[in-house]
Length: 122
Image (cartoon, rainbow, N blue to C red):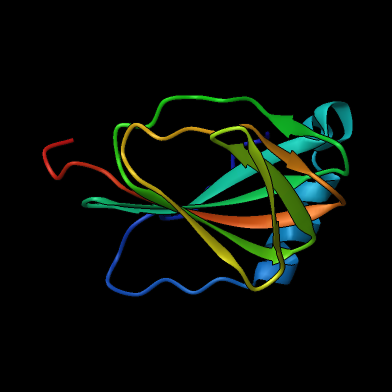
C-alpha cells in the first residue's frame, strides 16, 4: 500500500468512500494479494480503517485485545464461530469482543469498514 499524505486526526474529517475504495482497488498490493486496507482516522481510542477484499480472499484468524466492529459496505463475507458458518452482507455489522477472532472470507468482492476501540493509554 502506498502511503497517502493526509491527517488521521482532527476535529472534523470527511471521506468520499467511493473514491477511497477506487484508490484501494487500484493499489498494487490489492492487485497482488486481493486485500488492502487504509486507516482513515486514528485518534484517542478510535481506529477507523477501510478494507477491500477480492472474491475468495481469506483473512486468517487473529487475536484482538480490543472490541471491534466489521461493517460490510458492499459485497459479502463468510465467517465461522463455534463450528457454525455465518454470512454477513452489505448493510450488516459484526461485533467482535476482546479475544474473539475468526476467519473471514470474502464471498464476492467486498468493501468493509473496520472500527476498533483501543485502550486509551496507547
